[in-house]
Image (cartoon, rainbow, N blue to C red; front, side, top):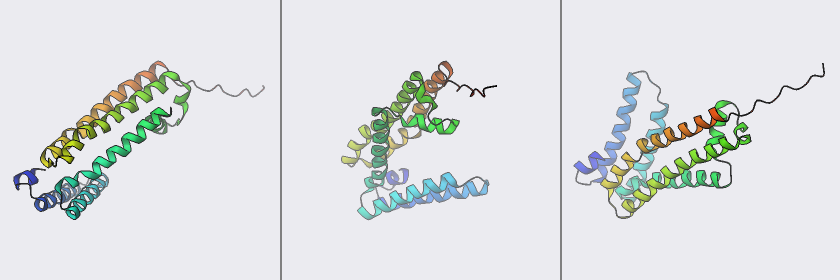
Length: 184
């Protein structure tokens, strides 16, 4: 984004800058002997977006795959809530070793639905702000909005979800199944 603005809205230097930043981060992680897993996945995403924008010749298209991902995630999460199976419940259930126990407790079902809606709001708020900027070809504003609506907004949703879920899990825990009677 910075290279795009400094170069007078030139696509080629911005694409080189994006790829160069990814390589620099990878090198720094290697020097620090840190995992490259997140760097590689992020770099693949940046490289794909750069390739896509270079093919269309439109700098705004660098952000199009991200917009489409927001549509997909937001829609999947919203549908999961609307059908009564919020995906966040299954994710936390898988992480805690009880995939579906939370479904037995109405307070937890409501908490997981609300927490999932927080993330739906993030994805659709991004679209509400960023799609008009994309359509207006306001690339610098779009890139800035993407930065501010990225991790900060996601972290806020995660914090709110954590608060709601942890309260429900504490106040209305999943009942522990009774041990089977061995007839002794």
